[in-house]
Length: 278
Image 1 (tube, rainbow, N blue to C red):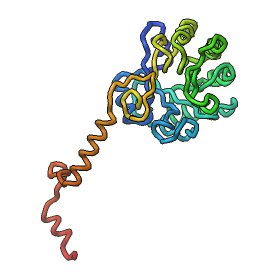
Image 2: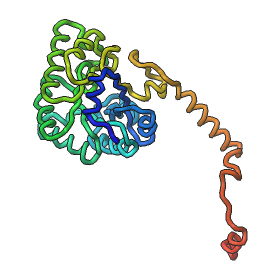
Image 3: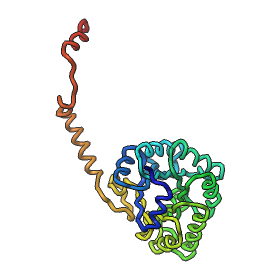
C-alpha cells in the first residue's frame, strides 16, 4: 500500500527520521522503493542531473508530468512528490492547472513549490482543491538568477527571522511538510522545533525531521559535482565506465555474444527460407 502524507507526518510524531530521495524514471524508482525509501521526489533537478541543462529553469510541465508518471509506474509503496516547475505557479489559475496535470496525468500524490509568504495564497488554494503541498525554503534553485549561485541562506538575524515566519505561514496555509535547503543547522533546528509538520533538510544539518538528497550525488554518478552536503554512499561512475569499457572490448574482439546468448532455428526451415535466393 502506498504511503500517504499522514504516514509521513506520523513519522515526525514518532520521532522517526524520514529518508527522501530524488527519482526520475521507473527503473531507479523501483530500486529505491524496494529499498524502503518512504518518499520520493520527482525534482526539477531533473534538468541538471538528467536532461543536461545547467539549472532547473528549462524544465517544463511536460517534462515533469512524463517523469512523474514513470516514477509512479515504477513504485508501489513510496509517496511520490512532484516539483512544480519554474513559473508554473505564478498565479492561482496557473498553479491549479500545473498541480492538476502533475496529479491527474503524472499520478503524483503531492506537489512541491518554492517560496515563503508570497506563496501562502497559492498553497492555501491548492490545499482547498485537495492537493497536498510541500513547501521549500532556504536556497531555492528556481531563483538561481537572483541568488547568483547556490549559497547558505538565513545567516543574519533578519533573514533567519523571516525564514521562521515563512515556515510558520506555510504551515498555517496547509503545507504538509517543508524542505529546508542550505540553511544553517541551528536555524533548521529552531524551525523544526516550532513546526508541527515535518522538515526535510538538504544541507540543513542533522536536526530536521528528515533528509532529501539527489540520488546521483549519493551514488557517485557525477565525477564533476560533489556538494558539501552530500555523502557518497557508493562510487558508481567508475564501475559503470569499467563495465561499459569491458562490453565495448568484448564486442570488438567478438567474445560477446556467444552461443549461450543466441537462439537457433531448425536447419531445414532455414534451407527452405533460403531456397531460390541468391
